[in-house]
Image 1 (tube, rainbow, N blue to C red):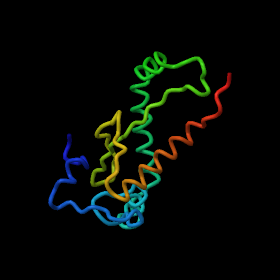
Image 2 (tube, one colour):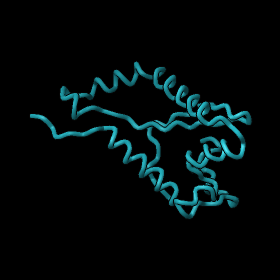
Image 3 (spheres, one colour):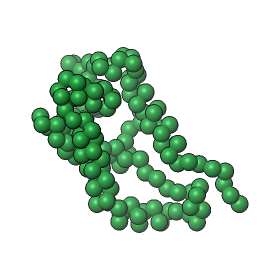
Image 4 (spheres, rainbow, N blue to C red):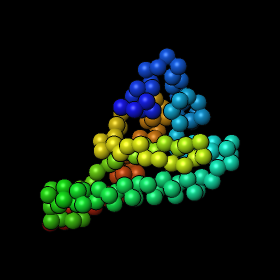
Length: 142
């Protein structure tokens, strides 16, 4: 574990929990939406550029592991391409330096979906909802 990991930090006596999902400007855990708003308004950062740089990191990381993921998915994929596709939820930990340059810290192949704060529940419920929508499930064809 690295020192920025929430699982480690939440045990600190200086940790400030977030107590309301609408108050994502309070506490040590913040939403990406709040962080981007803060960086743009308070720091004058180009958040569109930052998001593009983060997307580039994610895409390049996925490309580097594509051959492995392809072989894993082919080993478990059925012939019904519409309803039986495999997918994998990944968590990307990105750190920003003082100049707002993003760096990949790690990729979590099994990110935690547990929640212990209102902001956590709001973010992870949204993640689950968006993931299900992206699957575009239909009735299975016979």
